[in-house]
Length: 252
Ligand code: FES
Image (cartoon, rainbow, N blue to C red; front, side, top):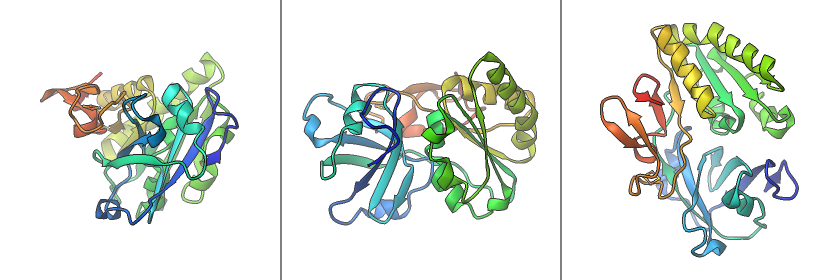
């Protein structure tokens, strides 16, 4: 476990690396950035009952990493795992971000929404077409930006107050229209961030791919605990139909 934090306290950030005990299933040979996993330590027994969903941050051979912030009981428990503890993982689950190597691509990340983009940037066939814009509140050192900058320079904007937020929304207003119509946009982050991107893209007559971070329980479409409103299909499970949707497919 790579600890950005130290004690499993709320607000701290962690990269948790898991090793498969045997050989990972063949599904892991074909996984794609944007997909997610459900993670549940064996020691939890029946409490909490459900695992926790995480974007796949890194996956290479038989190891898998997730990057998370401690925000409650489940993530607190994960932050306190020790080397050798057993964890059950379901995945890879869900769909993935599209890769358009023929178009300039804007990668928009808000806070912990940076997690799925390490592998997206690393695997992209045309790194010269990528632009990464990252909005965050905790200090930049809380996030794994250094390893991403091997692939593309990160334009990071920290929100310390309302003026910073206003400026960041202004920046999105300047850059999203062009990429939403003549390029490609992939985005992950908190709901207000995704809504802003959706609105700006729609006003420009374009669209973006948004990864939704709805709360999940089963992770496989069985409990209806993660639904969003799809314009054509009505309520759909984010875990089974997403987590990545085109911005003009869904209503928030
Ligand atoms: Fe159960 Fe999505 S988490 S349906």
